[in-house]
Image (cartoon, rainbow, N blue to C red):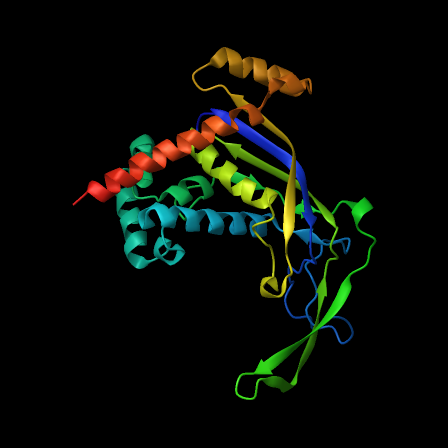
Length: 279
């Protein structure tokens, strides 16, 4: 899928915390400090792991796909089950010397969500960088909040279960950068649906979501698109402009959003009908 460059979509923008955000680094062993600190970079600044964003996005899109047809998004546990692992090993043994056919066979057993986001045997087409904090929006302070475990029998605070946790304040902004390469049009449509969920603050991040934490909103600044499939001249022109930092190397992908979403609807309609009719 990646042996030949076909297309590339670059997305930049910001993620803004609408409510406080807690992406935990795990329980602290420090004698003084928060019991549950947030994850920080080497400079002590908060950041959002790209895997956290990607995981939340994938989970939401998988729920949509399963609502259309359960076969469109496999249970994550099934991807690493012994039966699936053996199936992949058998295919690799049969087509070890025919990479193109092996890829084709692997795609046949790959659900739609994994074709975009990856699986143990197929690389992801969608990459998200760790989201670093925009310093002008963060004043080098964290908020400390108290929590307590509840005894389910008495419905009161359990003895000795008081703890505190750290959060990043609301209004903090993080830099967002993502790249998609060699994606099909329907896959780009699926991604547009997912990003829209973040743009409308419908996908929370981190822990404490049931108590209102983690509401974030994506503001997309640019979506740059290049498609050079089967066009060597366009690829050469793109590479030349890229080295010269010429932004005209890309097209504005906003002009393609409706087209990609339509391709997604057409693809899923056909796919669902095919699956339903299969005995």
